[in-house]
Length: 431
Image 1: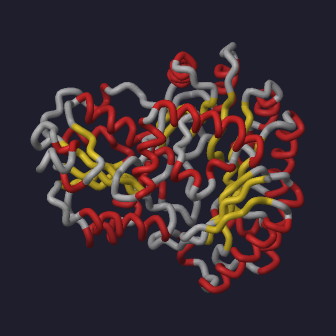
Image 2: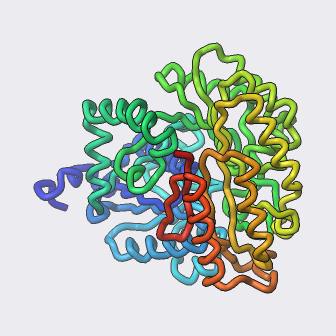
Image 3: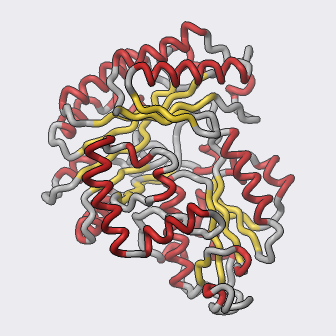
Protein backbone atom coordinates (compact mmCIF):
# COMPACT_ATOMS: atom_id res chain seq x y z
CA UNK A 1 0.00 0.00 0.00
CA UNK A 2 1.30 3.43 -0.92
CA UNK A 3 0.06 6.39 1.14
CA UNK A 4 1.45 8.85 -1.42
CA UNK A 5 -0.75 7.51 -4.20
CA UNK A 6 -3.77 6.93 -1.96
CA UNK A 7 -4.19 8.93 1.26
CA UNK A 8 -6.74 6.41 2.52
CA UNK A 9 -4.12 3.68 2.61
CA UNK A 10 -2.37 5.21 5.66
CA UNK A 11 -4.56 3.25 8.08
CA UNK A 12 -4.21 0.45 10.61
CA UNK A 13 -2.73 -2.60 8.90
CA UNK A 14 -5.29 -5.23 8.03
CA UNK A 15 -8.29 -3.13 9.12
CA UNK A 16 -9.47 -1.50 5.87
CA UNK A 17 -13.02 -2.23 4.70
CA UNK A 18 -14.54 -1.41 1.33
CA UNK A 19 -18.34 -1.57 0.97
CA UNK A 20 -20.54 -1.68 -2.13
CA UNK A 21 -24.23 -2.33 -2.64
CA UNK A 22 -27.02 -2.74 -5.19
CA UNK A 23 -29.71 -3.20 -2.53
CA UNK A 24 -32.75 -1.23 -1.30
CA UNK A 25 -32.95 1.77 1.05
CA UNK A 26 -33.67 -0.46 4.06
CA UNK A 27 -30.37 -2.20 3.41
CA UNK A 28 -28.69 1.22 3.11
CA UNK A 29 -29.75 1.82 6.72
CA UNK A 30 -28.26 -1.58 7.61
CA UNK A 31 -25.00 -0.63 5.90
CA UNK A 32 -24.85 2.62 7.83
CA UNK A 33 -25.13 0.67 11.08
CA UNK A 34 -22.42 -1.72 9.86
CA UNK A 35 -20.20 1.32 9.16
CA UNK A 36 -20.79 2.60 12.71
CA UNK A 37 -19.96 -0.86 14.05
CA UNK A 38 -16.75 -1.01 12.02
CA UNK A 39 -15.64 2.45 13.12
CA UNK A 40 -16.36 1.65 16.77
CA UNK A 41 -14.11 -1.40 16.39
CA UNK A 42 -11.32 0.76 14.87
CA UNK A 43 -11.77 -0.42 11.29
CA UNK A 44 -11.33 2.13 8.50
CA UNK A 45 -13.90 2.53 5.72
CA UNK A 46 -12.06 3.01 2.42
CA UNK A 47 -13.44 3.99 -0.97
CA UNK A 48 -10.94 2.05 -3.07
CA UNK A 49 -11.06 -1.78 -3.09
CA UNK A 50 -7.36 -1.92 -3.96
CA UNK A 51 -6.43 -0.88 -0.42
CA UNK A 52 -9.08 -2.99 1.32
CA UNK A 53 -8.45 -6.00 3.54
CA UNK A 54 -12.17 -6.82 3.55
CA UNK A 55 -14.86 -6.19 0.96
CA UNK A 56 -18.49 -6.24 2.14
CA UNK A 57 -21.10 -6.46 -0.60
CA UNK A 58 -24.79 -5.83 0.15
CA UNK A 59 -26.83 -7.70 -2.45
CA UNK A 60 -30.47 -7.85 -3.57
CA UNK A 61 -32.62 -10.72 -4.82
CA UNK A 62 -36.00 -9.09 -5.45
CA UNK A 63 -36.02 -9.15 -9.28
CA UNK A 64 -34.16 -10.96 -12.04
CA UNK A 65 -32.29 -7.75 -12.77
CA UNK A 66 -31.06 -7.27 -9.19
CA UNK A 67 -30.08 -10.94 -8.99
CA UNK A 68 -27.99 -10.52 -12.14
CA UNK A 69 -26.40 -7.30 -10.90
CA UNK A 70 -25.65 -8.95 -7.54
CA UNK A 71 -23.89 -11.76 -9.40
CA UNK A 72 -21.91 -9.30 -11.50
CA UNK A 73 -20.92 -7.33 -8.39
CA UNK A 74 -19.54 -10.47 -6.74
CA UNK A 75 -17.61 -11.36 -9.90
CA UNK A 76 -16.28 -7.81 -10.13
CA UNK A 77 -14.71 -7.81 -6.67
CA UNK A 78 -13.68 -11.43 -6.17
CA UNK A 79 -10.25 -10.91 -7.72
CA UNK A 80 -9.15 -8.11 -5.41
CA UNK A 81 -6.63 -8.93 -2.72
CA UNK A 82 -9.22 -8.78 0.05
CA UNK A 83 -11.50 -11.19 1.88
CA UNK A 84 -15.05 -10.86 0.62
CA UNK A 85 -18.18 -10.98 2.78
CA UNK A 86 -21.44 -11.18 0.84
CA UNK A 87 -24.40 -9.70 2.73
CA UNK A 88 -28.01 -9.04 1.81
CA UNK A 89 -30.82 -11.14 0.41
CA UNK A 90 -29.24 -12.78 -2.66
CA UNK A 91 -27.38 -15.58 -0.78
CA UNK A 92 -30.71 -16.67 0.77
CA UNK A 93 -33.20 -15.98 -2.02
CA UNK A 94 -31.20 -17.73 -4.75
CA UNK A 95 -29.03 -20.09 -2.73
CA UNK A 96 -28.30 -22.63 -5.47
CA UNK A 97 -27.11 -19.99 -7.92
CA UNK A 98 -25.15 -18.17 -5.23
CA UNK A 99 -23.35 -21.26 -3.93
CA UNK A 100 -22.19 -22.13 -7.45
CA UNK A 101 -20.31 -18.85 -7.68
CA UNK A 102 -19.21 -18.12 -4.09
CA UNK A 103 -18.19 -20.28 -1.14
CA UNK A 104 -16.89 -17.63 1.25
CA UNK A 105 -18.40 -15.77 4.18
CA UNK A 106 -22.01 -14.53 4.12
CA UNK A 107 -23.92 -12.09 6.31
CA UNK A 108 -27.70 -12.70 6.29
CA UNK A 109 -30.09 -9.75 6.58
CA UNK A 110 -32.08 -11.69 9.19
CA UNK A 111 -28.98 -12.15 11.36
CA UNK A 112 -26.68 -9.15 11.06
CA UNK A 113 -25.24 -10.00 14.48
CA UNK A 114 -23.29 -12.72 12.67
CA UNK A 115 -20.80 -10.06 11.58
CA UNK A 116 -19.13 -10.51 14.99
CA UNK A 117 -18.04 -13.98 13.85
CA UNK A 118 -16.76 -12.82 10.46
CA UNK A 119 -14.22 -10.19 11.48
CA UNK A 120 -11.26 -10.29 13.90
CA UNK A 121 -10.47 -7.67 16.55
CA UNK A 122 -14.12 -7.13 17.51
CA UNK A 123 -14.45 -5.63 20.97
CA UNK A 124 -17.89 -4.02 20.60
CA UNK A 125 -20.64 -6.42 19.51
CA UNK A 126 -23.07 -5.51 16.74
CA UNK A 127 -26.06 -5.88 19.08
CA UNK A 128 -24.53 -3.19 21.32
CA UNK A 129 -24.46 -0.58 18.54
CA UNK A 130 -27.41 1.86 18.90
CA UNK A 131 -29.94 2.03 16.07
CA UNK A 132 -28.76 4.05 13.07
CA UNK A 133 -31.44 6.00 11.23
CA UNK A 134 -29.74 7.49 8.22
CA UNK A 135 -28.96 5.86 4.90
CA UNK A 136 -25.50 4.91 3.74
CA UNK A 137 -24.37 7.01 0.79
CA UNK A 138 -22.13 5.31 -1.74
CA UNK A 139 -19.05 7.51 -2.03
CA UNK A 140 -16.76 4.97 -3.71
CA UNK A 141 -14.31 6.40 -6.19
CA UNK A 142 -14.82 3.59 -8.69
CA UNK A 143 -17.03 5.94 -10.71
CA UNK A 144 -17.55 9.60 -11.50
CA UNK A 145 -20.83 9.42 -9.56
CA UNK A 146 -18.94 8.46 -6.39
CA UNK A 147 -16.58 11.42 -6.77
CA UNK A 148 -19.45 13.88 -7.30
CA UNK A 149 -21.37 12.43 -4.35
CA UNK A 150 -18.32 12.70 -2.11
CA UNK A 151 -17.95 16.39 -2.97
CA UNK A 152 -21.62 17.06 -2.26
CA UNK A 153 -21.54 15.11 1.01
CA UNK A 154 -18.29 16.27 2.60
CA UNK A 155 -18.15 19.90 1.48
CA UNK A 156 -20.38 21.58 4.08
CA UNK A 157 -21.15 24.78 2.07
CA UNK A 158 -22.07 22.71 -1.00
CA UNK A 159 -24.23 20.41 1.14
CA UNK A 160 -26.15 23.41 2.48
CA UNK A 161 -26.69 24.70 -1.06
CA UNK A 162 -27.89 21.21 -2.10
CA UNK A 163 -30.49 21.14 0.67
CA UNK A 164 -31.66 24.66 -0.18
CA UNK A 165 -32.05 23.68 -3.84
CA UNK A 166 -33.92 20.45 -2.93
CA UNK A 167 -36.22 22.11 -0.43
CA UNK A 168 -37.10 25.17 -2.48
CA UNK A 169 -36.31 25.36 -6.19
CA UNK A 170 -36.47 21.66 -7.17
CA UNK A 171 -39.47 20.83 -4.97
CA UNK A 172 -41.41 23.88 -6.12
CA UNK A 173 -40.68 23.52 -9.84
CA UNK A 174 -40.75 19.75 -10.28
CA UNK A 175 -42.50 18.37 -7.20
CA UNK A 176 -41.34 16.61 -4.03
CA UNK A 177 -40.63 13.34 -5.83
CA UNK A 178 -38.31 14.65 -8.55
CA UNK A 179 -35.21 13.96 -6.47
CA UNK A 180 -35.86 10.21 -6.80
CA UNK A 181 -35.32 10.28 -10.56
CA UNK A 182 -32.19 9.00 -12.28
CA UNK A 183 -29.55 10.38 -12.66
CA UNK A 184 -30.43 13.18 -10.23
CA UNK A 185 -30.72 10.82 -7.25
CA UNK A 186 -27.30 9.38 -8.01
CA UNK A 187 -25.51 12.72 -7.93
CA UNK A 188 -26.95 14.76 -5.08
CA UNK A 189 -27.64 12.59 -2.01
CA UNK A 190 -30.88 13.41 -0.21
CA UNK A 191 -30.00 13.60 3.49
CA UNK A 192 -33.26 15.16 4.70
CA UNK A 193 -34.97 11.94 5.82
CA UNK A 194 -34.60 10.00 9.07
CA UNK A 195 -35.47 6.31 8.80
CA UNK A 196 -37.27 4.38 11.53
CA UNK A 197 -37.18 0.67 10.67
CA UNK A 198 -40.24 -0.30 12.73
CA UNK A 199 -40.01 -4.02 11.94
CA UNK A 200 -38.05 -6.59 9.97
CA UNK A 201 -39.33 -9.69 8.22
CA UNK A 202 -42.56 -10.75 6.58
CA UNK A 203 -45.59 -12.92 7.43
CA UNK A 204 -47.12 -13.15 3.94
CA UNK A 205 -46.76 -15.87 1.32
CA UNK A 206 -46.98 -14.06 -2.00
CA UNK A 207 -46.58 -16.60 -4.79
CA UNK A 208 -44.00 -14.58 -6.74
CA UNK A 209 -41.80 -13.30 -3.91
CA UNK A 210 -38.52 -14.73 -2.60
CA UNK A 211 -37.55 -11.90 -0.26
CA UNK A 212 -39.13 -13.62 2.76
CA UNK A 213 -36.27 -16.14 2.53
CA UNK A 214 -33.85 -13.26 2.95
CA UNK A 215 -35.54 -11.18 5.63
CA UNK A 216 -37.01 -13.99 7.75
CA UNK A 217 -39.98 -13.91 10.10
CA UNK A 218 -41.48 -10.77 11.62
CA UNK A 219 -39.62 -8.93 14.39
CA UNK A 220 -41.20 -5.64 15.49
CA UNK A 221 -39.63 -2.90 17.56
CA UNK A 222 -41.63 -1.69 20.54
CA UNK A 223 -43.70 1.48 20.00
CA UNK A 224 -41.62 3.09 22.76
CA UNK A 225 -38.38 2.41 20.87
CA UNK A 226 -39.81 3.83 17.63
CA UNK A 227 -40.99 7.00 19.38
CA UNK A 228 -37.60 7.33 21.09
CA UNK A 229 -35.82 7.17 17.73
CA UNK A 230 -38.08 9.88 16.30
CA UNK A 231 -37.37 12.06 19.34
CA UNK A 232 -33.63 11.62 18.78
CA UNK A 233 -34.07 12.59 15.13
CA UNK A 234 -36.00 15.73 16.12
CA UNK A 235 -33.19 16.67 18.50
CA UNK A 236 -30.77 16.35 15.58
CA UNK A 237 -32.87 18.75 13.50
CA UNK A 238 -34.70 16.28 11.24
CA UNK A 239 -38.30 17.06 10.30
CA UNK A 240 -38.96 14.32 7.73
CA UNK A 241 -39.30 10.75 9.03
CA UNK A 242 -39.73 7.51 7.09
CA UNK A 243 -41.49 4.63 8.82
CA UNK A 244 -40.12 1.66 6.91
CA UNK A 245 -40.28 -2.13 7.02
CA UNK A 246 -40.36 -5.10 4.70
CA UNK A 247 -44.12 -4.63 5.15
CA UNK A 248 -45.49 -1.95 7.48
CA UNK A 249 -48.93 -3.57 7.73
CA UNK A 250 -48.36 -6.48 10.15
CA UNK A 251 -46.21 -4.34 12.46
CA UNK A 252 -46.70 -5.33 16.09
CA UNK A 253 -48.69 -8.52 15.56
CA UNK A 254 -45.76 -10.44 17.04
CA UNK A 255 -45.57 -8.28 20.20
CA UNK A 256 -49.23 -7.64 20.95
CA UNK A 257 -49.71 -4.24 19.30
CA UNK A 258 -50.45 -2.86 15.82
CA UNK A 259 -49.69 -0.12 13.32
CA UNK A 260 -52.49 2.33 14.32
CA UNK A 261 -51.37 2.16 17.97
CA UNK A 262 -47.81 3.06 16.95
CA UNK A 263 -48.99 5.91 14.71
CA UNK A 264 -51.18 7.34 17.45
CA UNK A 265 -48.17 7.34 19.79
CA UNK A 266 -46.16 9.13 17.10
CA UNK A 267 -48.96 11.69 16.64
CA UNK A 268 -48.67 12.60 20.34
CA UNK A 269 -45.24 14.15 19.68
CA UNK A 270 -45.80 17.92 19.71
CA UNK A 271 -42.95 19.04 17.46
CA UNK A 272 -43.66 19.87 13.80
CA UNK A 273 -42.61 16.97 11.57
CA UNK A 274 -43.73 14.88 8.58
CA UNK A 275 -44.08 11.12 8.30
CA UNK A 276 -43.75 8.99 5.18
CA UNK A 277 -45.13 5.44 5.43
CA UNK A 278 -43.14 3.24 3.09
CA UNK A 279 -44.30 -0.07 1.60
CA UNK A 280 -47.57 -1.39 2.98
CA UNK A 281 -49.58 -4.39 1.80
CA UNK A 282 -53.10 -3.01 1.08
CA UNK A 283 -54.63 -5.85 3.12
CA UNK A 284 -53.61 -3.98 6.28
CA UNK A 285 -54.61 -0.57 4.98
CA UNK A 286 -58.11 -1.92 4.42
CA UNK A 287 -58.16 -3.60 7.83
CA UNK A 288 -57.10 -0.42 9.63
CA UNK A 289 -58.98 2.08 7.43
CA UNK A 290 -61.11 3.77 10.19
CA UNK A 291 -58.11 4.27 12.50
CA UNK A 292 -55.83 5.44 9.69
CA UNK A 293 -58.41 7.94 8.40
CA UNK A 294 -58.48 9.58 11.84
CA UNK A 295 -54.68 9.64 11.95
CA UNK A 296 -54.32 11.10 8.44
CA UNK A 297 -56.74 13.93 9.35
CA UNK A 298 -54.00 15.27 11.64
CA UNK A 299 -51.87 15.90 8.52
CA UNK A 300 -48.59 14.76 10.00
CA UNK A 301 -48.52 11.73 7.69
CA UNK A 302 -47.93 13.21 4.25
CA UNK A 303 -47.11 10.13 2.21
CA UNK A 304 -48.07 6.45 2.01
CA UNK A 305 -46.77 3.83 -0.42
CA UNK A 306 -49.16 0.97 -1.23
CA UNK A 307 -47.88 -2.22 -2.85
CA UNK A 308 -51.07 -2.96 -4.83
CA UNK A 309 -49.33 -5.03 -7.57
CA UNK A 310 -52.36 -5.49 -9.89
CA UNK A 311 -55.73 -3.98 -10.70
CA UNK A 312 -57.39 -7.34 -11.35
CA UNK A 313 -58.87 -9.62 -8.68
CA UNK A 314 -58.02 -12.90 -10.43
CA UNK A 315 -54.37 -11.90 -10.79
CA UNK A 316 -54.29 -10.76 -7.16
CA UNK A 317 -55.56 -14.18 -6.05
CA UNK A 318 -52.86 -15.88 -8.14
CA UNK A 319 -50.31 -13.56 -6.55
CA UNK A 320 -51.45 -14.61 -3.08
CA UNK A 321 -52.59 -11.06 -2.29
CA UNK A 322 -55.78 -11.53 -0.19
CA UNK A 323 -57.73 -8.36 -0.97
CA UNK A 324 -60.22 -7.14 -3.58
CA UNK A 325 -59.28 -4.22 -5.80
CA UNK A 326 -62.55 -2.37 -5.11
CA UNK A 327 -61.73 -2.42 -1.40
CA UNK A 328 -58.29 -0.99 -2.12
CA UNK A 329 -59.80 1.81 -4.21
CA UNK A 330 -62.39 2.60 -1.56
CA UNK A 331 -59.76 2.74 1.20
CA UNK A 332 -57.32 4.94 -0.73
CA UNK A 333 -60.13 7.32 -1.67
CA UNK A 334 -61.06 7.55 2.01
CA UNK A 335 -57.42 8.38 2.83
CA UNK A 336 -57.34 11.15 0.21
CA UNK A 337 -60.63 12.54 1.47
CA UNK A 338 -59.27 12.69 5.02
CA UNK A 339 -56.21 14.64 3.87
CA UNK A 340 -56.07 16.23 0.42
CA UNK A 341 -52.33 16.76 0.82
CA UNK A 342 -51.62 13.06 1.39
CA UNK A 343 -49.41 11.64 -1.36
CA UNK A 344 -50.14 8.07 -2.42
CA UNK A 345 -47.48 5.97 -4.11
CA UNK A 346 -48.04 2.59 -5.74
CA UNK A 347 -46.07 -0.54 -6.60
CA UNK A 348 -47.30 -2.58 -9.60
CA UNK A 349 -46.22 -5.73 -11.46
CA UNK A 350 -46.92 -6.10 -15.17
CA UNK A 351 -46.95 -9.39 -17.10
CA UNK A 352 -47.77 -11.85 -14.32
CA UNK A 353 -48.24 -15.40 -15.72
CA UNK A 354 -51.66 -15.87 -17.43
CA UNK A 355 -52.40 -12.11 -17.34
CA UNK A 356 -54.71 -11.30 -20.26
CA UNK A 357 -54.87 -8.06 -22.19
CA UNK A 358 -58.12 -7.19 -20.43
CA UNK A 359 -56.58 -7.86 -17.01
CA UNK A 360 -53.63 -5.67 -17.91
CA UNK A 361 -56.07 -2.88 -18.77
CA UNK A 362 -57.66 -3.33 -15.33
CA UNK A 363 -54.31 -2.21 -13.92
CA UNK A 364 -54.27 0.79 -16.25
CA UNK A 365 -57.80 1.59 -15.08
CA UNK A 366 -56.50 2.02 -11.52
CA UNK A 367 -55.15 5.40 -12.60
CA UNK A 368 -58.66 6.50 -13.54
CA UNK A 369 -59.86 5.61 -10.05
CA UNK A 370 -56.96 6.74 -7.85
CA UNK A 371 -54.94 9.90 -8.29
CA UNK A 372 -51.51 8.35 -7.62
CA UNK A 373 -48.68 10.77 -6.94
CA UNK A 374 -45.76 8.50 -7.79
CA UNK A 375 -44.83 4.85 -8.08
CA UNK A 376 -42.71 1.99 -9.34
CA UNK A 377 -43.83 -0.47 -12.01
CA UNK A 378 -41.91 -3.69 -12.60
CA UNK A 379 -42.05 -6.40 -15.24
CA UNK A 380 -42.78 -9.78 -13.66
CA UNK A 381 -39.70 -11.68 -12.47
CA UNK A 382 -39.96 -15.45 -12.29
CA UNK A 383 -37.87 -17.06 -9.53
CA UNK A 384 -37.06 -20.75 -9.19
CA UNK A 385 -38.84 -22.32 -6.25
CA UNK A 386 -41.79 -19.90 -6.22
CA UNK A 387 -45.34 -21.02 -6.90
CA UNK A 388 -45.83 -18.30 -9.51
CA UNK A 389 -42.97 -19.71 -11.56
CA UNK A 390 -45.06 -22.85 -12.16
CA UNK A 391 -48.08 -20.96 -13.55
CA UNK A 392 -48.75 -21.35 -17.26
CA UNK A 393 -49.00 -19.90 -19.75
CA UNK A 394 -46.19 -17.49 -19.06
CA UNK A 395 -46.08 -14.30 -21.05
CA UNK A 396 -43.18 -13.92 -23.46
CA UNK A 397 -40.52 -11.32 -22.73
CA UNK A 398 -41.63 -9.55 -25.90
CA UNK A 399 -45.23 -9.33 -24.65
CA UNK A 400 -44.22 -8.12 -21.18
CA UNK A 401 -41.94 -5.50 -22.69
CA UNK A 402 -44.76 -4.39 -24.99
CA UNK A 403 -47.09 -3.91 -22.01
CA UNK A 404 -44.42 -1.95 -20.17
CA UNK A 405 -44.16 0.34 -23.20
CA UNK A 406 -47.95 0.72 -23.27
CA UNK A 407 -47.86 1.62 -19.59
CA UNK A 408 -45.10 4.15 -20.23
CA UNK A 409 -47.09 5.86 -23.01
CA UNK A 410 -50.24 5.71 -20.86
CA UNK A 411 -48.50 7.53 -17.99
CA UNK A 412 -47.10 10.16 -20.33
CA UNK A 413 -50.58 10.73 -21.74
CA UNK A 414 -51.87 11.26 -18.21
CA UNK A 415 -49.19 13.93 -17.79
CA UNK A 416 -46.98 12.01 -15.37
CA UNK A 417 -43.23 12.29 -15.58
CA UNK A 418 -42.21 8.73 -16.39
CA UNK A 419 -38.79 7.17 -16.80
CA UNK A 420 -37.73 3.67 -17.86
CA UNK A 421 -34.60 2.17 -16.36
CA UNK A 422 -32.09 -0.37 -17.59
CA UNK A 423 -33.88 -3.08 -15.61
CA UNK A 424 -37.02 -2.31 -17.69
CA UNK A 425 -38.87 -0.97 -14.64
CA UNK A 426 -40.71 2.35 -14.64
CA UNK A 427 -40.65 5.17 -12.15
CA UNK A 428 -43.27 7.90 -12.44
CA UNK A 429 -44.48 10.89 -10.49
CA UNK A 430 -47.06 13.62 -10.85
CA UNK A 431 -45.67 16.70 -12.52
